[in-house]
Length: 310
Image (cartoon, rainbow, N blue to C red; front, side, top):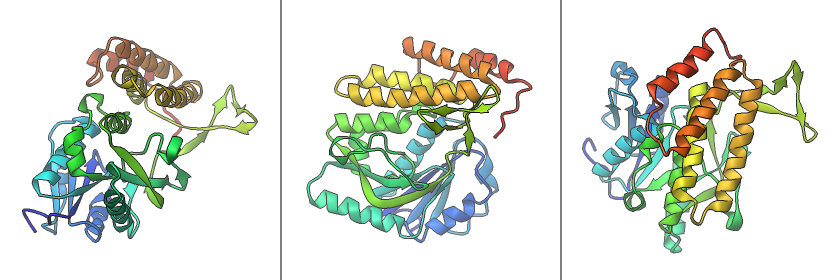
């Protein structure tokens, strides 16, 4: 099995960037559920030191950082070369429980047999939280990590948007899949373990704030991440507004809340505000790709000496 998989096989693709120390072990354990595991190091040089003991565990060292879309595209291209039919895509922080792939595959096979236009299936729960659904039980914005992708559909839909770099990559692919006549389905009861960062109390002017009667919490994002969140979230409008206006309005509302919480509660709120402003500006200009060095420098200067409490 060193050079190929079975015609009906599943390959796991994991994107990694300065990965946690236990990733090699988790990748090895995943071989109990898939035929091969491909770990793509997105320019951090970490996988070079791994002692790979199985020919079914493969590493790809990109040498330079391409962002999560570029890393996953490289892994998915390799999975297709190996002849796999399905690919499980994962972030480095995802925990795949026993039986996960079997359940996802069974649901996928049943959907295909029923004639459903399946692009991928995704977990219905992430760390116990249910994925939001819209009309017809479709997922609003399914998380990329944990999806089992039908590679034949991926070939028709096209690769992930690597010019988005690190944020809204999953959202853009979902919209593009739907515009091509495909759908991403949730597998009822299927849960993925995945770290999205520790929730922190929303403290503004020294008080834990209540909004709509509830004490609120937030997840810290570094300012450069806020830039990509704002820019890419707005670029979705430029690329997919036809036929997806209500979807985009709902997602943008979530984005505004997230960015507002971060800007209010972060100790580096000035850097957060500037990052969001630059993201908005570049979206209006239609600029994608990596954040401009000048913009990144401006954000970093405002963050000097500020240690976020995370």
